[in-house]
Picture: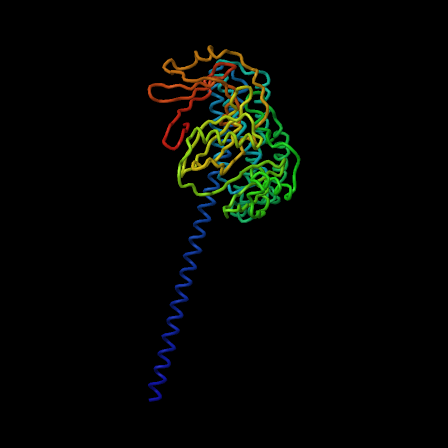
Amino acid sequence: MNQLKDWKERLKKGHMLSVICVLLMIVAALGIILYTKQREYRQASENSYNMAFYELVDYVQNVETYLAKSLISSTSEHGAETLTNLWREANLAQSYLARLPIESQELENTEKFLNQVSDYSYSLSRKNIYNENLTEEDLKNLKDLHSYSVELENTLNQLSDDLNTGRFSWGELTKKGTIAFAQQVDNISKESFSNLEENFHEYSGLIYDGAFSEHLTNNEKKGLTGNDIEEEQAKEIAEDFVGKDKIKETSNLGFSENATIPAYDFSITNHSNESINISISKKGGHVVYMNSNRAVNSEVISQEEANNKGKEYLERKGFQNMKETYYLKQEGIVTINYAATQDNVVMYPDLIKVKVALDNGEVLGIETTGYLNNHTQRDVSKIKMTQEEAKKSLNKDLQIGSEGLAVIPTEWQSEILCYEFKGKVEDREFLVYINVENGREEDVLMITNTPNGTLTM
């Protein structure tokens, strides 16, 4: 009997040992599989970063080549072709630069450089297309850009050598997070990056002739005037803006330092226990944003009444000479874009968005980022052609309904003073913008009227 009992015990222990061994084997197998997968993932990432880097090197070499060619082009046709190629190569270089696993001041400067090469070459190519000769200033700026491109090319070639010889890997860089690139590679190419950074510091102030220079090299918020304020001052401004008689409680939400416009954030509860969020800029104490999410269950007032309510509200808050442009209606609330005007010229970059409730006309929100970024007095005197002369540039089938002057923003963060013509071709509405200095057609927008608003495409 005792033998049978001992045999069962040994069998039980043997079974448990077998189970443990199997589990250990499974764990080991899973560990090997996970390690293999991680290694494969790291290798795939390394290959992807290598590909992006070598593509970047190639495109920067092409940028340098086309900049050199642009200096000796003797005809507008060949110049336009060269500058268009330069624009394309700089764009592609930016694309591959963005794929690298690095966030650093050096790469920010490199990105800025490539962006400005792209924008400037495009603007000069348009000159060539219109048979305008490049000025001495244009050629000087191209020469300066070429010098910087050579510096960038040399640095990237040095890094390429370091990468080929295994002196650093992308995996090492990604492990160290967002430390500056020169610090991440420590003793590798430190001198070349130091030189590159210094060169780009010099470059950052480069001003070139043309419509795009100020916006690309100057980060000034033109409408953000005044001195810096403290949080308690911002709180006072926020409460005054909402109306102290409406406030039950105000909570400080902190300081948004990395926002486009650094601001103090607050949450205000009114006597109806509705929450209102509001942001006040540190510089000057301007209202950047205010929003209430009150539910609106009916639509009583018309679009015209809403437009007037929004405009009156802006005037009370100190925003004068604003004109409603386009709007979008959703869930009983209409969001209206208002643009500043100066001497009857519509300033489209200076936009303020206002949310108006359609049940009682109450303003539920305001957003002033465009206005604070761009609002300033412009020189609108540089008009070299009449409105009638500008009409000659229009499609003959456009039936003009209204016309005027407007400053429009461009995709290159610049501004152009134009004649604005609103009209129809067949059943479609269009806005056409003609440059007041040279008669060029700068932009064409199609107006889409929907049940929920007027939009442009």
